[in-house]
Image 1 (spheres, helix red, strand yellow):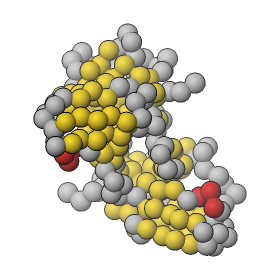
Image 2 (image 1 turned 90 degrees about the vertical axis):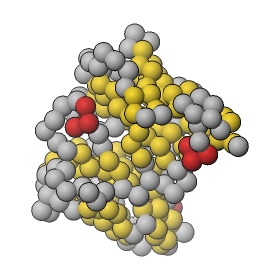
Image 3 (image 1 turned 180 degrees about the vertical axis):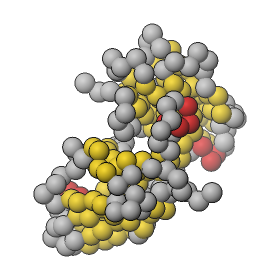
Length: 113
Length: 118
C-alpha cells in the first residue's frame, strides 16, 4: 500500500489565488513527521513546511500552511496568493520512526498570469 | 550557511562505464542520505549514514552500487558498471541528528546530479 498518496498529478491556478495540494498518508506509528518540498525545474528539493504528529496547531510558514487532519490522515498544503514563481513540482513526504523520508509521486503546480 | 553541495550537476556516460557522485553536507549535520529520483517520481532512499556508519542500506543495489563516508563528513556514491536503468537524478540530503521533532527532523537537499546512461 502507498504510504503517501498525492492524487492530483497537476493543478492549475491563477496568480494571487489560493491553492490546496492534497496529501494523505498511512502509518501506524504514533510518532511521525510530515513535510512538503518544492522542486522547481532546476531540480533542487526546497523544504517548505513541517508538521509533527503531536503538534496541536497547523504549521504555517509565510504563504504556506499545512492543513493537518490527523483522524483523516490528511496533510494538505495550502499556498495563499499564488505567484508565478510557485510553478513547480510539490512533494509530500513522511518520516516515521527513525527512517528516511517516504515521498509521494508529486503534484505539478502551474501558476498563470 | 552553505547548503548541501553536490557534484557534478550533470553526467552523461555510456552503459557499463563507472560513475561517481560527491556530496558535502551542511556543516554539523551528522546524518547523510542518498536518494534516487526517477523521472516523474518522488525520491527513494538508497542509503543513510549516521556519521561514518551506513545504518540503512537495504535499498542500495549492492552488486553495482557502493557508497562511503570515510570521515563522517562528505560522501561518495559510485555505480560500476552503470546500466541504462540507472538514468535518474541522485540527490544527497543531510539532517541535524540527535533532535526529535520540529526542524531537527528536516532534511535539506542538494541540487542533485542528473545521470544519463546511453
